[in-house]
Image (tube, rainbow, N blue to C red):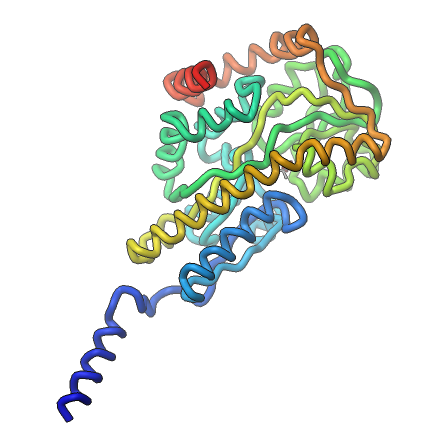
Length: 333
Ligand code: X2X
């Protein structure tokens, strides 16, 4: 009898222990824009897999790609997470920048010349400041991933100087900074979601677009007439693994730690993988007959000069101090 009482007490204890957390949802929604065929989707897959494994099935996440939880409007993802409509996300800094102005940092033309610069920013003081800005707005950021350096494609001509862009209709993401950058270059930018981008390229409603090589490759942008590609690397969009703060608070400290470590590991894995694949991706794109243009230092300088006004206009909106921290990180990388 004594033994039985002990067992019952132990069982009751287990039920009440923080590990049981009966109030957890059966499944947490994870929003992404790009699905599993892309590095972005793979980053989310990895996170979900690691969390499931390490929590021994206690925490289950389900990915909804193509921004379907916000009807394809990727610029609404952050607000939906903040309000708790979406539990978690692996999202691009570009898509969240309308709600978090500091995220425009990464879109400043030619701020980051290489991968080491991205890392110097995200892994340093500037990265911490960016995470604090996200946190302040009701979303808890956990780790960094990478969509990548965005390269310019079009169906009309080889682009190696700003004047080549004169009058070209370019699809850009729904962020005002992009509108400014392409306007400064003399192009005719049109904001639209990713869902609308490929149809617009197909019909010729737009002449060009900008996205990382992996996106150009997997989405087969070459098949919709995009035969010219310029590797100008004018900006790169990191991905952020994040949880709605309302949802975050419901997890035990141990599980918060588990979720964050899994995001860090998934992000590192995805960043390494997507960088390692770049050369092969480039070769594949060339094999498909796309004309790939690299800029000479002089041509590069002309693009920097042509977009300087955008850099200057947006610096105060992002925050002078944050931009300075990022510039220092790049200089000292
Ligand atoms: O819409 C795009 O271009 C994409 C898929 O790269 C982003 O979501 C930023």
